[in-house]
Image 1 (cartoon, rainbow, N blue to C red):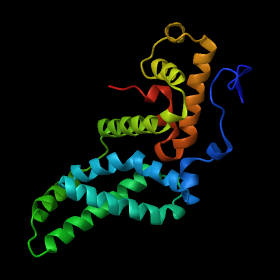
Image 2: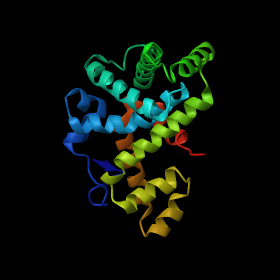
Image 3: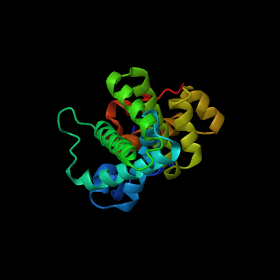
Length: 220
């Protein structure tokens, strides 16, 4: 595969392998354990954040998170991201909400009930006022994007990664970055294009194509 008739291999940008031609979600459905580990790594901080926002203590949030991913693993073969109004993030959030509700109810029914009443009250308040918060959604997207970058970073040599990061995240010019890193502009463009393509290939089904474009990756 080439960009602007320049071989990525010749320019030192790693070519795509056949193994990574399938998306992360597709590989996980095929019982690829490494793909499943990547999905958990991608979404674990967000699931924990959702649990904590609903009043769970740290240890309880971690325990519920494990239940969430067990449910996701069991339901993954039947999940279809192309269903109308269905996204992986939305599906995962619904599972998390259900698991938190189950946990709080079980806690309240336990003999000591410690922590159950406070968490239940917090849950009731949140459910009563829950609405789409654009800022919260933006923060979630940034968190997922940063995690996705961490996951794929080791697939690229660090000079090309710096070229990508500085032009895409730090918004430096390709000319300045090329000069600082001792590369040609074409190598900078190729590295940026290659990494963005890899990011979409791996995570578009899990995060959303629109959230993996350069304009959506700006950090605060």
